[in-house]
Length: 215
Image (cartoon, rainbow, N blue to C red; front, side, top):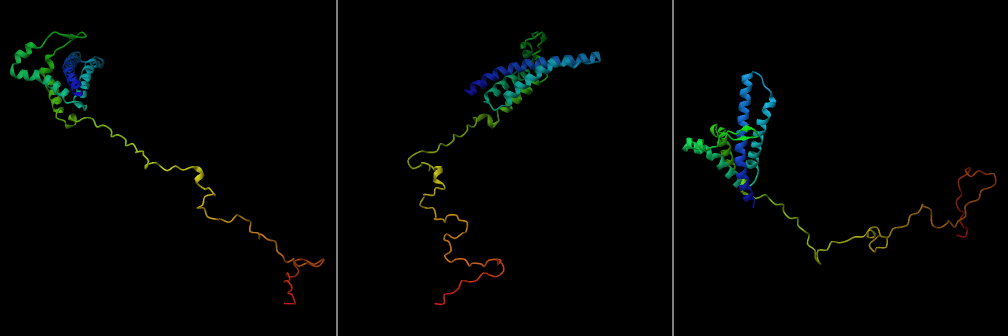
């Protein structure tokens, strides 16, 4: 399908480019000659020819540079080269066959002008050279499909719950002692030594527990 659309594009682009180049070259040449005669210039007079030439270059670039089917540039190049090649064989017959006196939007359309100065031949050769680009004969690369993970009885992913982490009831947790403040669990059985009345607790060191004489 892309070859068909490219072929149709070549059939349309070739004559349109010829017409636009003829209008642009004729308008640009007459405008500049007028400036020379008057000794002054007005750049607004050159805008219309520049638009014609710009659109012609845009069409030429789309067909010749984009990565499309090579059939379009081939057809357009042959159509644009043919008139100049005909001038080499039978110049007077080609000149008489080209229409003269046509107008587009009130401007004269000299179709012989781009053939005579070789512009049409130049554009046609450039399009024919673009046909030999190896990238044009290849299709656009398609993105590789994203692999879908296989699902089956043996490919199920393990699932975890929030309660599986830090659960104190699991059998693999280690036994840890409860937190304490460092005090002994049992109170001392021996009574503390009594102090006499009026004596300071810091006046003498604490007395050791009296030994049983029976020992």
